[in-house]
Image (cartoon, rainbow, N blue to C red; front, side):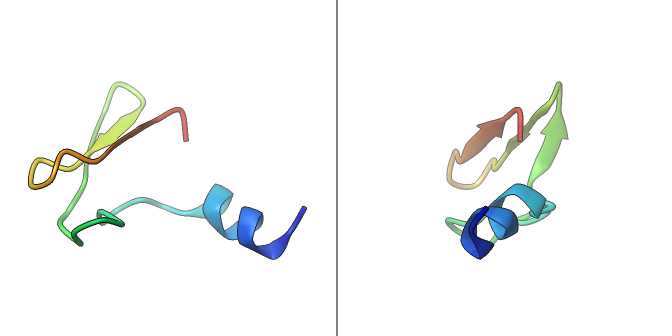
Length: 42
């Protein structure tokens, strides 16, 4: 596994990678209410 892939897989996702706002965790997903970024099954 490449270093880049490891970093992506181990991210905690506390803050949005798009706008930097705090992410909300719900039902296995993280969502940013500021810009709409969403990631499920991380």
